[in-house]
Image (cartoon, rainbow, N blue to C red; front, side):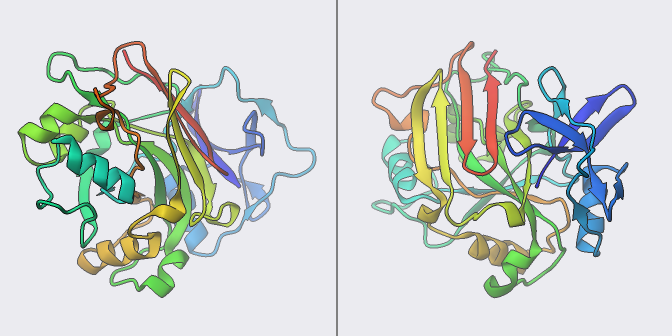
Length: 293
């Protein structure tokens, strides 16, 4: 099932999305119409509530022209993983922008964890501000993101899948010059509008997250094309690593890393410019599209 948040005259509403991504209708829980928010739905689902398919006579409406919101408003920073595909780790290390790796190191020995401020989150279709006054090296990063359902600490790899509610898409937009200058990643990645997320959440039973094609196109040009099977540290490892240090909570988002093909990996680099359109697609979820302004 795919779940989205839309803006209505009475405020945000959680809706079900059709398989083709073109229509929406009321969400149903335990067979009745659901009126709460996404965070509450996740918590209630984990507590035993059952999401149910819309009835045959459900009032489906065209999604075109409807204002999509980011599928979540996380209460905490978005957890992110750096250098988690071999080819991207190599292109980043060779680019001269990576101040975190040791000489000759392509793949990190442990997951590289950082965060993005929740204030950086925007929805599918919203504009990414180029912030030309502070950066001239704007880049994109297509990523599969985990949405935590069941809370837990010290979660084992064997049990990790049980803690996942679903998956969405994150574009980890990055100011490479700030990332390099400050020798850490938070500032260059947490600028307002630098975390496009969406267009919706696919529930965990709807996709095989260990084997998904992930692609990014800029102005129609295919830049990134990989599979989540190529992750250096797989999803259970990431959940085990994070939960060893802190309790993961319902609604937490973990962006799992980006594959090769980011702008800094080209010679010369292909950094984003105002007017560029980024489209991140992940098999079984959908496409997240944002324009740089």
